[in-house]
Length: 69
Image 1 (tube, one colour):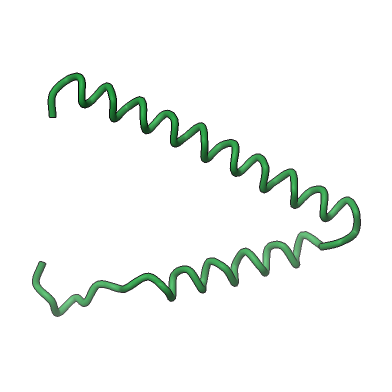
Image 2: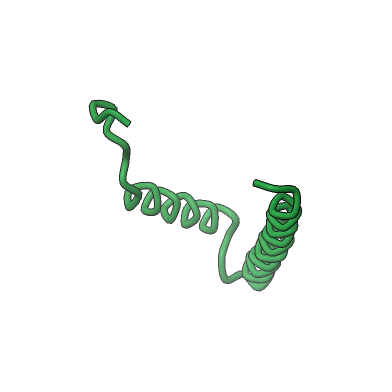
């Protein structure tokens, strides 16, 4: 990878970090709004997040340690 490719890669990484920050900020704002309006509790949101994470992990194929790489 040459120097310009590294610069382009670093720029893409910075853009991704900014996008991730904005997404997290929006999710946090929505959660606070739901809690503030009494539509959900912190525990309900945390439980749903854990449920979604478990489902996501279950959907990902797991590497087989017996298979050589």
